[in-house]
Amino acid sequence: MDSPQFTAEPSSNGPRSSTSGAERAPRMFDVIIAGCGPTGAMLAAELRLHDVRVLVLEKETEPVSFSRIVGLHVRSVELMAMRGLLDRVLEHGRRRPAGGFFAAIDKPAPKGLDSAHAYLVGIPQPVIVRLLEEHAVRLGAQVQRGGAVAGFEQDDEGVTVELASGEQLRARYLVGCDGGRSTVRKRAGVGFPGEPSRAETLMGEMEVGVPQEEVAAKVTETRETHQRFWLRPFGEGVYSVVVPAAGVSDRAETPTLDDFRQQLRAVAGTDFGVHSPRWLSRFGDATRLAERYRVGRVLLAGDAAHIHPPTGGQGLNLGVQDAFNLGWKLAAQIRGWAPVTLLDTYQAERRPVAEDVLDNTRAQMELHSTEPGPRAVRRLLTELMDFDEVNRHLIEKITAIGIRYDLGAGPDLLGRRLRDIDVRQGRLYDLSHRGRGLLLDRTERLTVGGWSDRVDHIADPTAALDVPCVLLRPDGHVAWIGDDQRDLDDHLSRWFGRPAN
Image 1: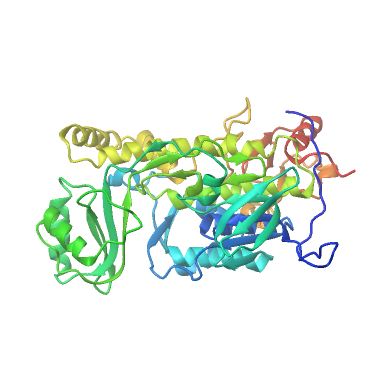
Image 2: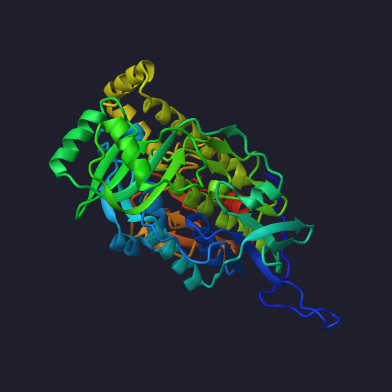
């Protein structure tokens, strides 16, 4: 890797008067984030851990009102633990087994998954968004609702952002976390190739008018031929309802309860007496990936960079994990200690992960088909998943604990995230709340030296680790394994720039 380069620049978070005094210059921030969904809120919090001045612009004036349940997969649960958020998340969510995700093939979670948090958390999407936004605001991020990005211009020093209201803002970097129809991506001229929707599905929550036993029997019968169909009880007569749509339409057009009744009758032969909907929506199987994640001082994350069908429940998780990877790297660039190529590793690491997610969702959608060929493949894969190795591989893929970034040759642990292990001071993840690097040293003879302002050092010969020492990045991935100080110093420079002294 090239030698480190410092890029420190002065910044201000308040309005500045122009030299003439007649006008005020645009408000200035280090980073402006477009979109305050899970990705944008997570990114804002990660940046604030490093004292980066952040404004999050959310075009909606009020949080979403519907209460769709989403699942935090194992890796996202680990991220919540690493930042001290897991207890709050579990107060509002429900643990579920980490199995049965791939194409909804009903197989149990493999035993002994490599995580202390080997479960899924089902939680209403508005709640997880609120928790992450509150976390970001508590750390000092600013959130401006009703702030829709209309356009921007970037130069060598930063980005001027224009809002739909006509207000102009200024930042050193702009990050588009503004969804699949991202204004930031379009204005940056980034291509979004892929496949348009070929099939559409209705999804909602509503009450039913028939006994639960009757619903369960009909669902079992119908799913023999229609995998994109289910009714799952939430309690008190409320069900999650998913049913294939009649065709493909504008996703911005909300379906009606009559649409659900019609499709339920067409697919299952009954509408189950559905009534009193909580929320109704539709989703397609469009699959697209941004050609680039960065154009100068403009970056993309979450659905702005990739869209895919929700099968396997990976979308929200993929975006939150994008933010976790990007946050410390962008903060390092702004704080002035980033090695010259550090920010480029965001695309190099995360875009291949998104490619893999797009491919596995394509495969899952094929396995939902009612055609004879895909149904035969589904039956064969169902048999193969009885082998632990197959089931484990697919679950690790869906839950993102199988990710290994390409950090060069080395042991298999290099580039992987490290599970939450016991250390002398307690649990490893409890020591990661500040978002810094961490040297876990079982030899008790190494040091982080001039990097102590960026990297913590834990000397613990009792740590539950099979190697002498590991250097962890702020995102929890293993950047180095060994016991030699000179080699460690080289890798500290590679990931954390020049030492302070």
